[in-house]
Length: 190
Ligand SMILES: [Fe+2]
Ligand SMILES: [Fe+2]
Image (cartoon, rainbow, N blue to C red; front, side, top):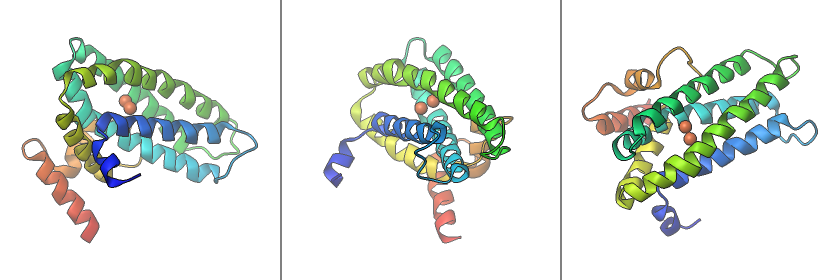
């Protein structure tokens, strides 16, 4: 993809791409015969990508839903509770090995929970956000989400709210984007 094409993609395109990648990983994890990757490694990669995605959505995209959608507060509460469910499943998967009896059951549950969640986001919440929020704001949100994903945790922490986890890493409240940049710079040099 050229830089010019990349520049026109907004946060909603990015999140939809990530949904698609997660679905592909889940499909590979649940297929019996055509596994290209080591299942434990694939499970860890899936977990990292879903945890980062959920944290970044909660920090930057759900606040926009609260602000711009009429039923935004209810939609966000619903979506956050589904992230929580997802994270509990990821935590169970973390404690299992591919040969374990419970592994296929947890993988199957992992395919169901996000499928419903992703359908809500892509068919309902995201199109309404795109209709309400100016494109330059959505493009700016993409940068913020990409930064947030780089500093977000990669392991599931079902007992702590994502906003708390995130603020532990970048510091609270005001000037969050600057703090995010500092955290990122520290990670690259340290
Ligand atoms: Fe999502
Ligand atoms: Fe989500």
